[in-house]
Structure formats: structure tokens, C-alpha cells
Length: 165
Image 1 (cartoon, one colour):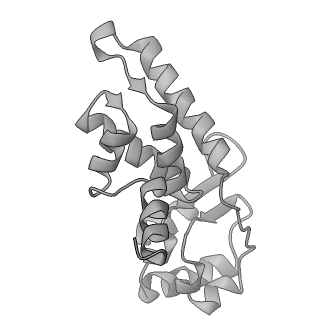
Image 2: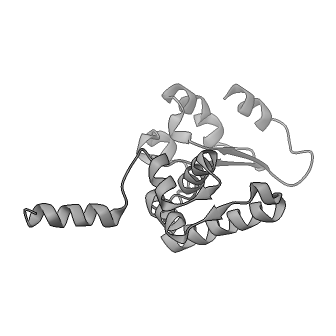
């Protein structure tokens, strides 16, 4: 925080603004936030702070009262599927044949559903799957994601339990 506060004292060398992006801002301590209060109350005209968090309730009230808040909605499963397919296609364009990635549509869709709207989570899961195998099949995804089972199997299991079968 001291470094950020010191950086705020000087104007930007290039451009109109100095922009500070603090990701996972909910992880900052109360002391860290309190040290930011003065600069947030009277920021220099050329300073912009962007605080990113998935847990806004963990940010102290004195900070929340001094910032403008934008809530972003989760990304649709279809949007995540498109992006994951784009990533795989891009990788395949740059990789030699022996490093090509094969994907099953059902595997990519399952990864997207697991992410529950979080693009970062879906990309992380895809990376884990690629560490396991260049063949991203539903079976391999299930093995990587803690040995889970696919939803169809769970639904069938649930129906069988209800029917006492």
C-alpha cells in the first residue's frame, strides 16, 4: 500500500491517468484498506483505482461508501463454450501436429457448466485437463475434476433411488 500511495504522488509519464488495478481486493487487510482511506477521499485527478473482487461483502464499509460499484453478471455456458473452443483452436493453429488438442463437445460443455459462469475457472479446468491429456474427453474431464460423474449418471442414479431400483 505504501508503494501505491507513493506512486500516486507523481503524475503519469505517458497518458492522462495512472490506473491501479487491485485484483482479489477482498483479500486486503483492514489495515491496508484504512491506509488507503485518505487517498480514496481526495485522489489526485490523474489517479484511478479499480478494485476487483468476488466477495464484495468482505470489503470494509468505509471503502464501499467511497467507491462506485459495478456488478458484472456471470457468463453464459454458451459463451464459455465458445471461448474455450476458441482457445483450443488458437492453440492448435500454433502447435505442431504432435501437440494438437482433441476435444469432445460434451467435455467442453461440461467444463463450462462446472465453471458456473466464471471464465477464469473454466480456463483453469481446461488447463488441468490438458496437463492430464491432450485428448479432452468427457471421461478425462471427469477424472481430472476429482473423479466426479457426469450429470446424466447422477440423474439416473437419483431416479433409481426414488424408484427404489
